[in-house]
Image 1 (cartoon, rainbow, N blue to C red):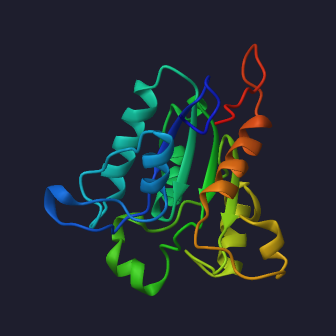
Image 2: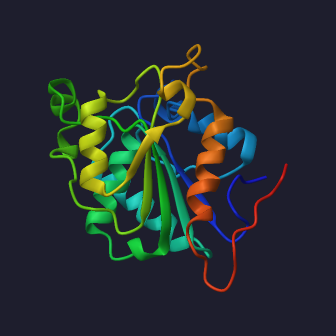
Image 3: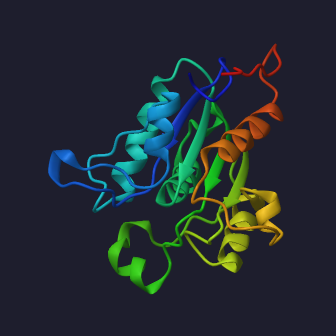
Length: 204
């Protein structure tokens, strides 16, 4: 069962450079595991190894347009940069209620300036919908200062996925835990008013 409210279509925007080659390519990161457990659809991309910004934006645009319900976005890594670039250009960003951005990739490092030229420069426009940027411990995606800059550019709130570990208490959690991520998504969407109804969440 989807981890989003029944009235919301949750779209997953995974990180790039997963395992496999050719037709067997798979996205990287946590979200394929999320999809396997909760069943929310992943926005398919033609090439996870050599991602082109324009191609990825087209796929997201089509997925949003085909949805019969208001959309929420759950993005990880390069998928977070996709959200920012797409929202900067799309005329249909109003269809999105909120976006949860997990460990955005810093595309402006020297490494990614060469590997991901079509993603330069990083989008710096405020997102036209509610958003939250989540940090992972150990740090993933970019250094803390860069994460803070991205959150400021996009108008996103910023916090650690696990608040207690973000305060430096206790042992480090397992990488990218699904439970806290689901709670973060539900908390973000609960704060977004749906037309004519409140938020109702599945318990299983």
